[in-house]
Length: 150
Image (cartoon, rainbow, N blue to C red; front, side, top):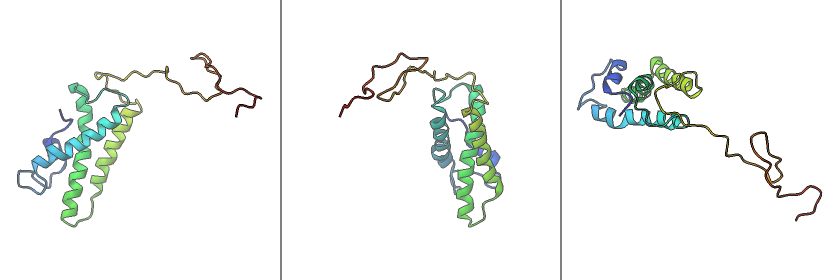
């Protein structure tokens, strides 16, 4: 299940009507650009949530991000094919998507209906002469102070 669809892209890119014969086709949008955007989103969200997100309420929050990432890539292709200058709005779509995704990653915005990855403090790294901490017992020291161990 994709987070956005070609209609979401069409709402943003109004200067082109996408079809089977347009420069960027409907197939390109649904098989390449949207999956690429969703992969980027999932790659970042997988630290916090089980991905892909499937709850429809949470997918609606990700639709905004997915559509803008895909639309910015598609618009760049169209503008570059026409040898034109990149409009600021295209840059703003990507910035807005980055900002919204950052809100989710920094836990300012939650996906409450999706499964969160539980964080654990059980795996700790120690140096060879570590003394432990409040959460873990002191590991047995590998190196002794004041003793030649080479």
